[in-house]
Image 1 (cartoon, one colour):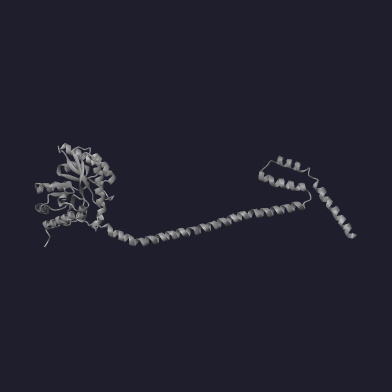
Image 2: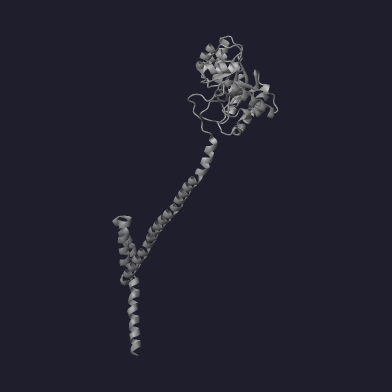
Length: 365
């Protein structure tokens, strides 16, 4: 036999009372919002008959239809989905509380629409994206403080708390740090004592973690699945906890890839060494060139010394130097003229035969 909405509701209320007592709180401090997104009217009526008076909705048009068909007195409707600016007029007309104000332009538009229909004030909460998830709406904690200051200046809005949706985990205890962060942020804003701002409400906790939320100060818990069962077509969101385990196992594969990259990097110096050897060989071959030049110089000097006339050397030197310096012919003539006076050198060489004759005479004796 299927469990009725009333039976599920009794279980949820018992869990809420136990969590409140565990945290040393009065159960009356916490209000239950029955989330009716995608829930048929029959179940909503059953929840109302079982004592539910606060209903949470995500879509403005869906809420319009349900309000018209339900026609129950004493109900409150809370908007808990992402609110677009062009829906602000309807939101002001339909809802008692808007949980998801996350920017100043939306706050200004709600204030304007409340004034236009003659509504003195509408209660709002700031939605904070405490986990910084790109897939979720909400303002960052630092921006929430600035937004609270801006809302305090809007006469038709009354800021009464903060709302957050932490990442979904299989273990409810994993949500606790996010709830603590939101509570401390509310305390920080309250210390500023802004006009029209009294953050008494924390809208945190859903079907899987509302007990932990109550322990950390929740005053509004949003419960849908635990009361009405899973919605038709709802897609289960995978919990991040198992993914972390998987990534830890996958870590060695990454390390292997890193080792391969490191090995490739180590192999690179070997190539560099080979390149260095080639360069050094080229350098050494270049250095060897001067040796050839020295040998060439020796050959030239030997040839030069074998010649008796010294001026001939200088003429040859002048001729060799001329093409390198591309000097004019006149310059070479001057060099030759200057070199001409050195004719005394042959006289010394003539003296050599005289010594040889003397040595021959000595030998005969």
